[in-house]
Length: 258
Image 1 (cartoon, helix red, strand yellow):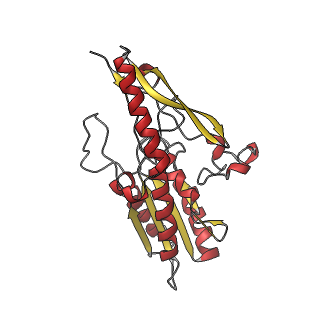
Image 2 (cartoon, rainbow, N blue to C red):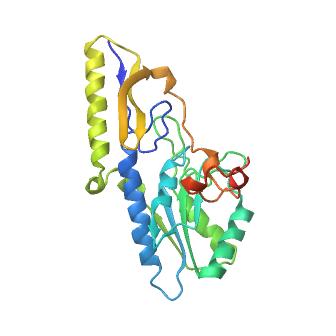
Image 3 (spheres, one colour):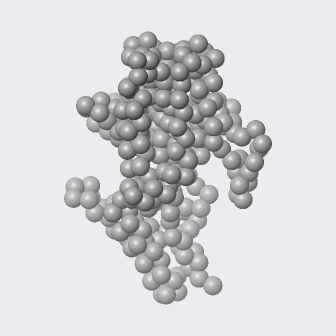
């Protein structure tokens, strides 16, 4: 039996491969949803706090894609919470209060995998349900943050949007590049199997940003299985609650120090 892996995960947490097919489409959906819900949340006299929860158990790529949403040259999300950065409730609440007093509105994007300093999930389900891999079923990070904000006395007007499975199934926003690359990765996997290869994964590597160009190749399955590609911490602000713009990412003084 020949074993050939074909990568796919919107979490974009696979090592070696430049990006996982599916992530681009999910990122587009999340960025679009953040922009649309941001505009909707700004129409009220008392706008309050709006929280969008994305998937992402161990890596924050999906939550980070919320930073792509901008309006009039300004990023919609005031705060972005990632699994890679331990959640500090006191620091978080202080920042929310500061922004709320300044703008009467706070927009937060949070990954479902936000963790406390001890490594536990902020929102592991009370039923302690597990999937077939033995992972705790997550969901509810947004509501946990809502409770923190309300109980902290910032405001009682807090709305939570959990994108759930829509972020990985909204085909109307699928990226054409995503579709093409997924097709070629699958095609290459079949050719590898035909040639008798085994224990490999079909991958792509980036050759150029401008013009955008990738090369299709392969790697040993052991280089991907049970490994996680995390968000680079030099892309996270020092307070750990937002992302730097790409142009500012090289500023080490602003990057997070764990």
